[in-house]
Length: 228
Image 1 (cartoon, rainbow, N blue to C red):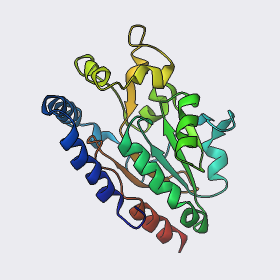
Image 2 (image 1 turned 120 degrees about the vertical axis):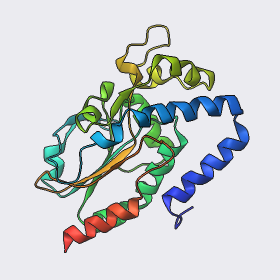
Image 3 (image 1 turned 30 degrees about the horizontal axis):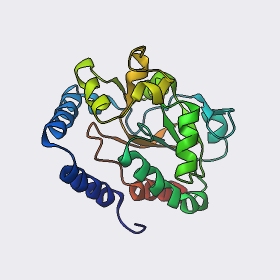
Image 4 (image 1 turned 180 degrees about the horizontal axis):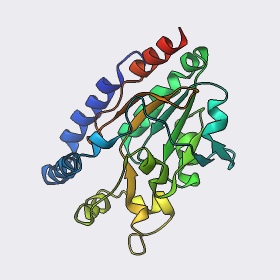
């Protein structure tokens, strides 16, 4: 689906999901999304002009810590926060960024994707979708929290994920539903940031509605303006 806008691809997933998933389950997901939006979390996301928090997180491929300061010494940095490999919207977004890697390199930028998944789950994601960029593990969504993206799935909504066979505590911490910690139920809003080499945020966008994502071409356009 190269050449399509990312949001068009995501909207196609939504249409297909509404055909396949029972209405009562869809209603639970819709309510959870509305509840999250009503917390005002979108209004708290670190904005353009803010200083980006520094981080050091484990890379799925090498097992080594990747430091944002080291990346920024090489060029501008694009960061994509994603929920997990279980989310088709997330993997579609990651694949879109995969296809844009040559353009990012031409503009001198680097790219990393961050999720609360364990390194093992991130490595599965990397292999399954042929992702050439670092996938970094953020236990308990601690770094996402510093970007003001993190939230804990409320207890009443957790059985919904179990009913559709998504084990978030296992993906995030290797835990079962029975011994899950609150931290293992933490997720980030899907969000994208562009950070310049002075550690200032030049692009910032995230949404409580997981079906809506920042358009990569808008990030690329911002990066191109920075390069002039």
